[in-house]
Amino acid sequence: MAADVTAVAGYRQPPRKLSDPVKRALGYGALIVASALIMLPFVWMIISSLKTNNQVFTIPVQWIPDPVVWRNYLDIWTAADMSTWLQNTLVLSVTVTFLQVLTGSFAAYGFSKVVFPGRDVLFLAYVGTMAVPWQAYMIPQFIIMSNIGLNNTLWAIIALQAFGAFAVFLMRQYFVSIPDSLCEAARIDGMSEYGIWWRIMMPLSVPAIASLTLLTFVNTWNDYLGPLIYLRSPELRTIQLGLQTFIGQYDAEHALIMTGSVLSIIPVAVIFLLGQRFFVEGIATTGVKG
Image 1 (cartoon, helix red, strand yellow):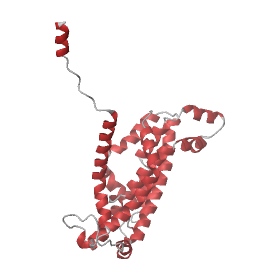
Image 2 (spheres, rainbow, N blue to C red; image 1 turned 180 degrees about the vertical axis):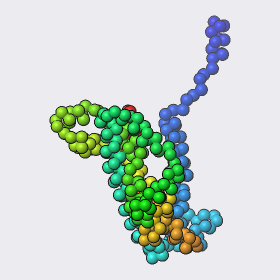
Image 3 (cartoon, rainbow, N blue to C red; image 1 turned 90 degrees about the vertical axis):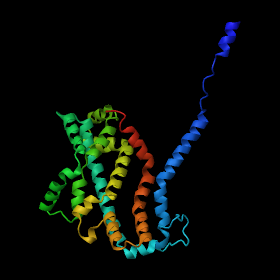
Image 4 (cartoon, one colour; image 1 turned 180 degrees about the horizontal axis):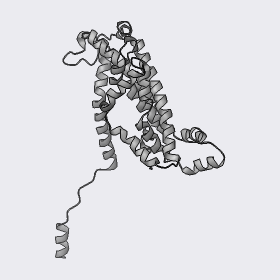
């Protein structure tokens, strides 16, 4: 009996674990705080676009504009050539995105569903080019574009970005998760490789296509160095180049600079909101197999 009492007296209860609702609440709280910190600069930019110039950098920060200057979104179109900048950027982004999806998916089909000697070695070599920094071959590219007469044209950016190793890698990783039996059955029925790619692989790869579309569009839309090197005429400026020149000319017009910045991110935000479900699914499933 004494031994039992000693055993009971020396027993220590294990520490209590947090219940699932508490863990979930803490997790949501951490995510809300992180999201707020990430969104804070964007919120400040939007609020600043509705202020006067003297109110943008006031200390402490004035979070509620007084008065609300909606006219900034009208004045920016007369103070800067926003329509031309947005048009050039949209043309480049849509064209480059379309070509990368087309060429990337087609090459990915060959690397994933067509058997030929050296396929895997060639794929690894091609994907390995992503490790080479652009600055290493920037000058040779510029010389090539100059020799074929594409400098100072939108075609220079389109030609350089129409193909991408990342696009091939992303699409190939998704294609390998599609059963080969579908392709074999289509070949038995007499369908060509082009037909299999277009009528079977592409409809089944909507999440991967959406992910590639979003990533390529955002990357092309935000590109600054490429247009800076190849586009010298004012009528060819993209939104990033245009805003930089606008800042240089109107360095005191802080409210208008914020207004132009807000307008520059609206298309990207819309694209992301429309395709976020497919984007998350595509990123989550591209590494399932292969």
